[in-house]
Image (cartoon, rainbow, N blue to C red; front, side, top):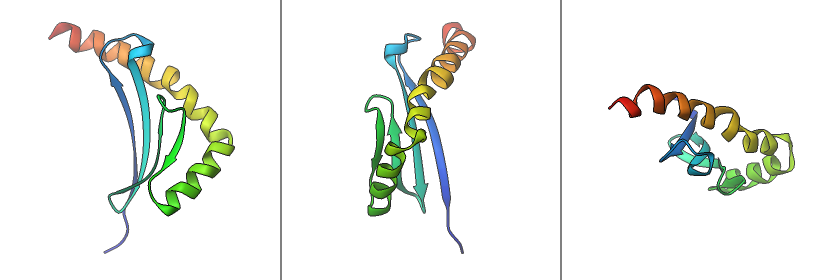
Length: 90
């Protein structure tokens, strides 16, 4: 019994070029996606009533700027490492 809240951070890529990389940050409650940020969209999007209100708040605050810079800070850096360490050698 209880509630489940979790988030995921995903880097989608098909090359190491920054234009081919997407950063996606999603928040879930009881396995239902509530809100997410996708660098291809550039803002938070809500999927439930609670998610829509949270997306509005997040898009008006510093969180949207932090998420917009996360692609370069997190994905571009790590995709280069992962590509060189694993994919290029397979």
